[in-house]
Image (cartoon, rainbow, N blue to C red; front, top):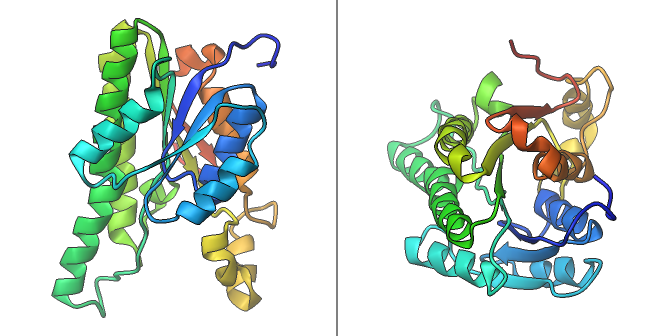
Length: 255
């Protein structure tokens, strides 16, 4: 979709302070959209993201998405007077908790924290965003950032894999429910993406093994995920509502 063909929209990117979220924010801003960059604790990183966005009118919205009232405020602040056109559910938590070698207490807390951020917060943000779009009488897009782990499993991070599978299922349910309101709901399922958080894992033998998962012999970039999100949030993608777009370099193929 060309810049000339588009009109400026208001976009909320949760977890937009760095990594994939930062790349997504940059992609929308370069396209001429107005971006609300959400963060919780990484305010300095969010400010860096904000300073690097093309155009004007962008802002940082801060809030703990595990608090339902904070979600309502964040979405409302992002929408402002113009209203919200696009929500990207990118905020996520991932912590190791393999079932063998993890205490029961740590296991329980890992599941609770992961689902609170990766699933429940996204569900609440989607609810608030959808109602904002419906009230404004405008078409909208919700794009969920899932993971190939939803399909291939995450043995060291089982709550993460489960949360991403549930996020996809939720998105497909909402795609059906919100279609009459001209709201498109889709998901992106990235493979291993090179971000600040995982940079250390890409060194040495582990890094070589991770790269070998793809026949391209490399890992993905945040910009490649952002490109997929930008398409799924375009008017041309409305008929793709309910879809899951794999962005994993053929490292995992599913039927």
